[in-house]
Length: 386
Image (cartoon, rainbow, N blue to C red; front, side):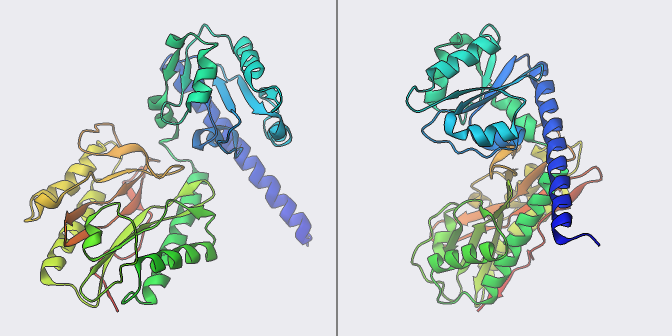
């Protein structure tokens, strides 16, 4: 029998090989997309796209950092010298121009421009790149050659690979376990901020590597603000309690919402809740490959519009989910892009009545070749907790 050390070494070797295979496939996909949209190269700053293609975690700090891949697969980087050890070990195949704090990054950017060439188009992350990196590039590339590549970059990550799906499933499992534990402890008399702290603690205890976003916990009339701030409000009998939160695991983020009631739900509130539940069911039933993404929104929203509560609709049905909590595709009627196996998005219809109640039921779904796999399993039935 092999020693524990030998087994761990074998596990690490397999994990590294799996990651390298995934990175190779992702980079190939990036070059194919660049050719399809006739962009010669694309530059990434630290963030989800940067790590997606390199496997390296870098923080967006005061030191400009850039990774660039060309349509023919060549890779370059501008890197602070203090990151040399980590970067060179992970990305030896990238031609890298290092700079130190004393000299600044200008020479490194100039060397990058000389190596890549400035006659072609260079795509940038329009929604992420800061002015500092953009200005450094615009001093070297003709401004007309710098193009917003966000549409292409959305397509790059829209289909999740098996490693991403596994991490997302783990994140969701942690989230649902934490929710069950916190609700089981009871909600009556507890402050919203206390429930937030309990959720955070439970997620970490069960293995979360972080939080998708600050948990949204809103009681009573406060629940009518879809993205309200938790406060000192105490949960009292007859009130709704809206909980929107998610654990992070690896690079993936869960995003789940459930609305429950304290002690009892009035008939009026129960009718609103059950309307949203039916919309959630209809939305999930519309998830399948080959059908427009917007049809999911249409299916869910049509249920809400046909109810007596149509005036309480405030938002679309969902959004893509993965390395970012909000990414492509956007689940709204106007999105006629076709669903494809590997897409992950939320189905989260809601109804909101200012001064009274907000109800949202949010699930995370995976489009499969055969239809849909709902990654979330927490009950959607009207639930009352003491």
